[in-house]
Length: 128
Image 1 (cartoon, rainbow, N blue to C red):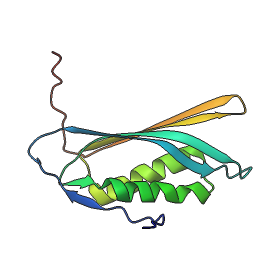
Image 2 (cartoon, rainbow, N blue to C red):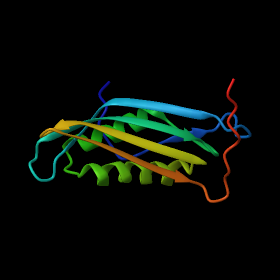
Image 3 (cartoon, rainbow, N blue to C red):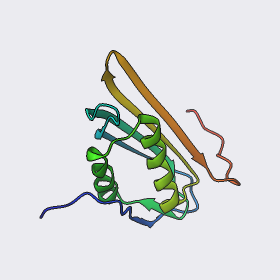
Image 4 (spheres, rainbow, N blue to C red):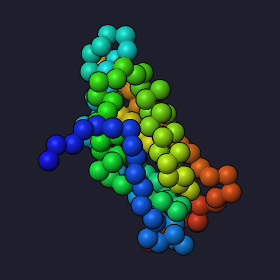
């Protein structure tokens, strides 16, 4: 079966809505194009979020991320666009996206962007 990249992000019901639990997703094969040179940029995306009513479906996330491989985008813009799209479809209590771009011209770039629901307060962390 062949899959095509698309911008349709799917969600499913949070199975434990009464609990704040952290979902971490790592995607080491993100690719987009430099809007200045057309050369490929590679990054590892690290997502961490606390779902509210909906969780992000992983296959649709993969197909969505795959779409960027042929699009020109500055690192800062593409990282924030991905976060905005995830917030729009899932409205998480909290989400952080860390994009670590591979070296290019002797420069490493890391972009970290976050979103938090207005009335959500994180629980106190317990260190054991």
